[in-house]
Length: 183
Image (cartoon, rainbow, N blue to C red; front, side, top):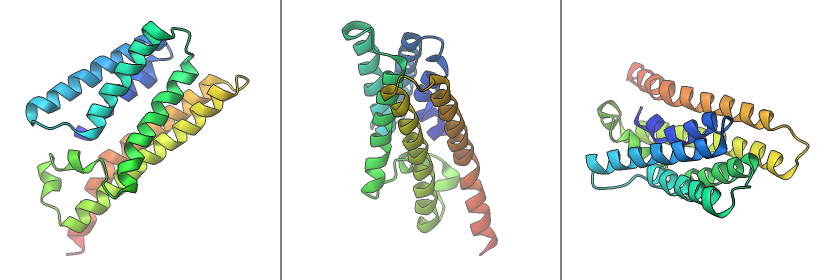
């Protein structure tokens, strides 16, 4: 569940940006601030997703608010999705799934055998990376081709976010149950 909280800023942005780009950015920035501070108070370290979301939404909110207020929703969505894709994909490419930092906080997962723990985290990190890859493609298509409808990109984002959330909430328990039954 801690991992889902880490994605709360982006989920809020995705939902609220359709009402107002600025509202979506500032609420996402505020949520990222709260998540980052909460995590820092719990432990004196910052997780990559939390710090990255905080920085991303701070820059986007301030940039659109003060530097380029005409930046379109499609462009903002593309920048956000691409940034998060890189933030999640690069550590995975270097064999360091970002979800490990969150999974270690769950006492149920911390006691798993190392192979199961790593496999689950690779798959969860991969699911989120794949979701952001799809969102980046959809948002990029809309940002670079004005004839494409924005609602298709938003729909794609909501579907893949729902799939990633569902996978994150269900798969670890399923994998642990399966591993326990094989012993």
